[in-house]
Structures are given as C-alpha cells and as structure tokens.
Image (cartoon, rainbow, N blue to C red):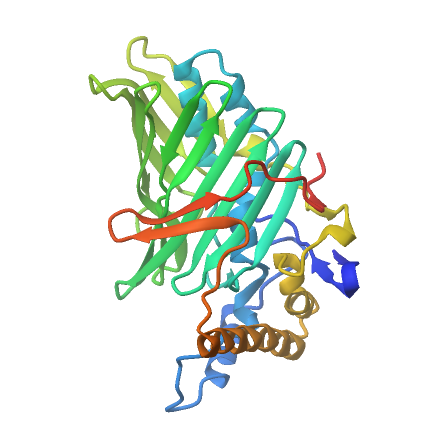
Length: 381
C-alpha cells in the first residue's frame, strides 16, 4: 500500500512477516541464481568493498526496524493482555514465557530487510498498544523500542544490537541488549534476552539458537529456554524450544517447557504431571493484518515506511534499476550527513531515547517520554 500526505511524504506498507519469516504475499523474491548474478555484476575485480551496497534483489520491502517492531505489534491473539489478566504470579510468569516465544520470527534465507539509517523511526498503534522505535546508533547498529498500553497498563522497553560472527559454513548473530516487560498493575518487571540468529549456508536455512533467560525479581520466578536447531537434514519448520520455569530461591523446577516455537509449546507441571499448551503459533499468526495509514499529516519524515518508500516501490514492481538508484540516494545522503557532523564536530543525539554504552552491560536505551502517543499508522483489529 502506498500513501501520500505530509509534504508529499509517501509510505509503503506491506504484509507482516509470518512466524517462519515468509515474505509478504505481495512480494516474491527473485530466485537465488538471479540474485547471485546481480551480486557479481555489482562487484568489480579489485574494487573497494568498504561502501559496497547490497543490491535490492537481496532485500525484502521492509526496514529491519519494521521487522523488529512487528514482533511487538503484529499478532492475532493478544498474549500481552493474557499476561496482565492471569490470576496469580505463576500464571502471569508462564504467560510472559509464552509471549516471549511469540516474538521469535525467523527471516527467510537469502533475503534481508534494509539496514536502518541513523535516526530512522517506526511508530505504529494496535488498539491501545502504541509502539515507537528509533535507530539510535548506526555503527554499531542499535535499535530501541518503547511501547505502552494505556488500557492494560503495560510497558515494553527493548534495546537491540546484533553482533554477527562468521564461522565458515554459518553466521551467528548474538543479539545484545536489555528487554523489559512491565506489568504495572502488578508491580512486576520481567527481564529477558534474545536468542542468537543463525544463518547456515549448507544446507541453506535460518534459525534461532541459544539460551534465553527470563526473570522477575518481584516474584522470584525465572525461566531458562534453549532454542535448538534441527539436524543438517532437518525439515523446514522444525524450530525446537525447551526449558524450565523455576523458583530462583530454591532452584525448584515448577514446569518443564518443550515444543516448537513455530507451532505448539507445552508446559508440564512437575507436581501433577499435567501438560498444558501455553503457546500456539497458529492462534498468534493465523490472520496478521497489514498496518494502514490513519493520519497522513502525522507521519514523520524519519518514518521507516517513508524513508524507504521509493526503494520498496521499485522492489514491489521489480524495477530493479529504480530500486537500486533509490537505495543509493538514501545511503549516500546518510554518508553526506555523517561527514557534515564530523566536519562541524557535532555528535548525533537520539530524539526519543537516552542511551548509554558500557563494556560490561552493553547498550542501554531509556525512553524520554513516559508514554508512547497514538501513532499515525495503525494495525486494524
């Protein structure tokens, strides 16, 4: 969807990514051979790769900032509401574990979203949930997210910094940064991290791996989850997760958690042996709706869907020359602005977050505003 409004600002909105990272139905990536030939044509022997731009053939029509935001606001079943309305602390914690699993979405192999530019924003509302993201650093790439739900009295504060490392046949990206979920009605704050993203070349596949820890200091409950990739010959969709929920003071296990984050996850009560489905991906992802523009005049020039609109239009229409030229315009302008700041001795400061960086704890992003205002882009209910 393309819309024009504030000073001819255009936005391009596409369908959300599915749980398995399938690209929007209105876009189908060219085959891998075509993309590799395009990559070879864009690299000249002996050329300097410092400022090399990935051809748009390898991009999906979204920014990484949008993909990050979608994990918070694109869902069919509102698990955040379930977290808030659970009757007791253990049920709330179990619901938070299920919600954390629901934010796991795997990108498709061989394509990637745009790298967000410095200061890029993404502002979307779904019902009473208002979500605001900002790219607070470009080198290294750091994204910040703040979301508030006025009705449920819930707050999310996330900071994300992917750190990729190459291991010959695969790339593993550790996702640094703190993630907080606050259930303000209950005075509970849940701290958690993200699993690692693994891109394997032979056979080609993308998956989440590694450990996730979720803790709530107020209730003394903790969870450890392990995301496990399938074997080399494993089928697409085999995305295992297993772990436990336990009391931190006694280390007593209360529930064992096991299943597939792309389908069903169950929790087994250690005392009774009873198994309960705590997460069903089909319920969460069955009918994801594309956001729409509600207030054209309210869209900022820094909005992701506006910054990359010309590139996205080129990709969707398969006009690769137009897409490449538009992408070069965006990236060249950013390099120009960066040089101007250096020449003037200026330091860029985020508009919506205060940030700090320490060697021990990594990046920490704190929202400037107490509440996120309603957005000009909304997800239909």
